[in-house]
Image (cartoon, rainbow, N blue to C red):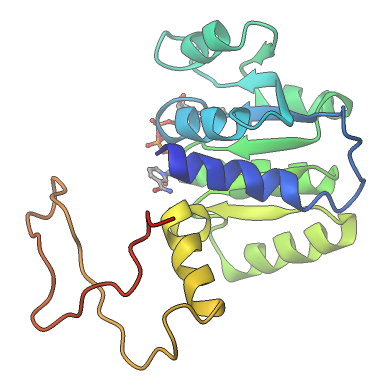
Length: 205
Ligand SMILES: NC(=O)c1ccc[n+]([C@@H]2O[C@H](COP(=O)([O-])OP(=O)(O)OC[C@H]3O[C@@H](n4cnc5c(N)ncnc54)[C@H](O)[C@@H]3O)[C@@H](O)[C@H]2O)c1
């Protein structure tokens, strides 16, 4: 999870499109929906030394939701309504949106229209039209709107992409995809029949 979190942080901070942040400036982060995935999104982005958590928003003020986040980030404003948060748009630069699915396009699109960078959990939108609107508006306001999927941001996937792009594994002719390790919904392990060993150990120096 830490690795994925690192991916999230770099995604939001690397591409400072609309303005260039000074060396001593921090990206001011607001988080909407701070329970399950929201908790890891919030902590992942907050792990960057370039980020300051300034606002937390969740409809549930309980100990597993807003309460826990507020305890960890006592200096951040606490809100229970995302519209109230957007009323204070001048106080933050970016936000994570990790509410249940149905709220993603409402919160995400409104935030992008205010010129905020958004890291929004999947699904980013409900319809292709909304997704296209998101891209159009993000381009217009020159902000980053990224969908929260490990496959887009996790260190393991980004490393694999880099190895392929850098030519480290040569020309890829065939790809085997499988689940290694035991997950609760899938109890398989080991490599596919006939698979070669990885040419470069990922942890080699
Ligand atoms: N990328 C992934 O691998 C992954 C994994 C799990 C979940 N998700 C996505 O993350 C999202 C959240 O899932 P979860 O499992 O963390 O759910 P969750 O129920 O644990 O957390 C959702 C949080 O949002 C809050 N919330 C609900 N409506 C809100 C609103 N209108 N404004 C502010 N806060 C609101 C809830 O109180 C809760 O704290 C879902 O869209 C899900 O698809 C992604």
